[in-house]
Length: 92
Image (cartoon, rainbow, N blue to C red):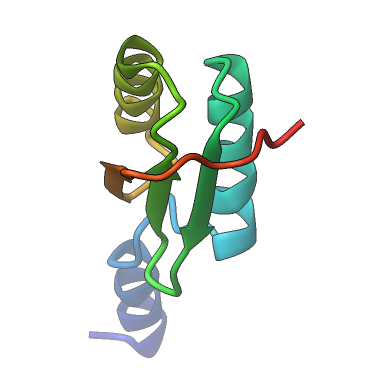
């Protein structure tokens, strides 16, 4: 094979939707804001996985709504979440 073909094949093998952690963090923040969550904290690791902590003062129905919204986002490659036993301060 010609070297150009090999380079093209190598480029096609890369993931098409590889987002930076900053882009994923922005998507998580926008999704949480649009779902109305107030008592939440999150972090995005170097693999792009979002770790979301909901405070005990966040209603269960809103946690469920936010988790479903986060899971439906194609730009968020992974999600780990839990609802804490302690309250969190509101983010706004």
